[in-house]
Length: 227
Image 1: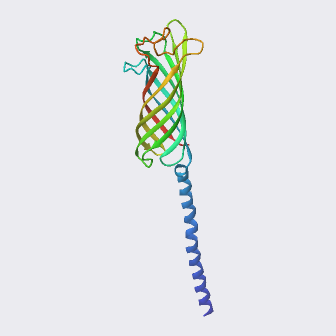
Image 2: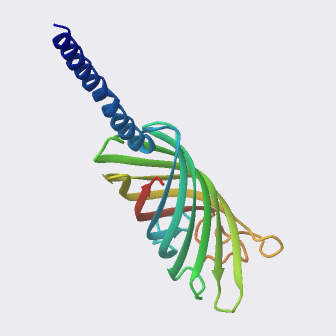
């Protein structure tokens, strides 16, 4: 009887060990899956992106054809605070190789800008969503003239809005964004009595209004993701 009892005890112990080992092996796999999801699900997290497209400046906002037209490219980074909201900044550079006949002829003009932005994503779970970037910042404009000089201007842009559809591919969002904004260019210190806009004796613009407000419009392809 004792050998049979010993055999039964040994068999029961083996069964207990097999059952006990199963959760131990499954648990690391679950932990590994959680670790893989952590970079995309954890908040806050850093999101980086880039964009490129076409851009126009309307120097007076008077409904006339755009005064400067060309291409724009930029980079951005944001801290995503939750599924729908983030805060960040953007840098962009523009090259305007076309200008209206209201401006003196000359080589291509350039523009640089820096913005702080609030970012909204209406459906981050995707795959389709609407992306909204609302920002404020400062723009520098360098306008070469046929005479060989280059006039530089700076202007505060209190509002810039980008809006468009976004499609998620893995950890990357691809969006087509239409943008508008407005601001005021001021005169270059020690040079002119007025900015590139407004009616005055030495304005660069062949102007028929006294408005110094400029408007921006652009259309860009944007890509955004996280490291």
